[in-house]
Length: 503
Image (cartoon, rainbow, N blue to C red):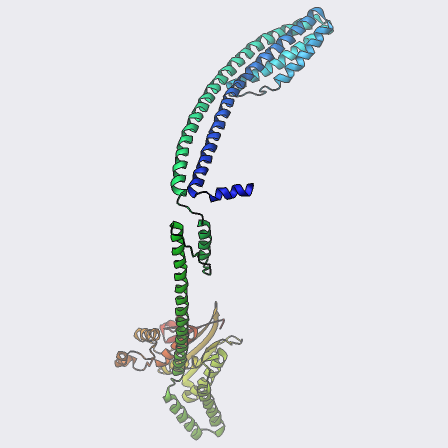
């Protein structure tokens, strides 16, 4: 029966089903408003309970009267019934007055309750003492306590009356206010019911009639497409209504996306192949640059060295000549046989020692070479023939004076190894410095030709410096690893190289 009912509902037209839902919604709204109004009426009737406090005070006043009457009967007649009635009334009075305010308050009603509480406590105290005095036949105490009891009782009754009046006024205001609120709630409820009923009817009628059953399926497929899952089955709807049109358009969109993705993948593969070829060509180009820069050695140095060796052979014994020639051979062997693009700093420092020995043999006491190198291994890799051209430049310009001084220093600075080479020559002009850095920045191994026209700078052939700086730049892919500064006291030239410590 249940399955038949479900199928019957599904087989109805969409418009009929929506209208049925609207009718159910209206019935539910009407039921909710009816229930709300009934509850409001019940709440209104319950407002009468607001005066419960007044009836309680009246009952309390009666208990006090009974207590006072029982005390008088016992004082006058001293009967068992009167004492029993007194304690029964007293217990009820104590139960009630303990519910009253027991400390002062700025609120007038609560403060009046506090006064009644205190007076009730005093009344019970004096009346109890009067009973006890009567039992003991102490006439003087009886008269005193009896007088205090009556005075306290009269004043207590007047305060209860005032408290009752205050509560009556307060409850009346609350009753009127609550009733107005309930009336207002009823009006608002009816108003909103009408507004929402009309809005729900028209919105549901004009909106839901455009929704068709396959929308859930379309939504699921759309979520898969949004998650880049284009391997979804096509709808292949044959209907000509709105849903059929949507499904047909969705099928076409998915087919177009698949074709577009195939095209993008094909282009990506082609671009990747071109990128790999470009990287390979760039690597070959860089390697060619490095090799070309490393092979730029001053040929005049070879001839000067050989001449010096010939002079030593004539002037000195064969041992020194042999050692000198061995040093020269080692130097050129390092330069010619070094096939790798990088060597350790220690190897470069060894080549500098070899080169300086050759220069000292050539220039004698005119050359003073000093170095500060920490007693440790420096295995960091740098381009071959990096330090020797800088030392050669410093010796060349330092010997323009009567005695040339060249100083080499290696030290740690943060994450770098700093190598500085300085001389005491005439220094390098700002134009040459700027030209060297300009040539390095534009990967041009030559200085601008116009600088050679200046006779003052004709001795500064910056090709060697530019070659060194270019090779450092190509090796470490950074352009802040070298600098040219003035020497100590503004004299001479100081070359600074910063090698990353992690290479």
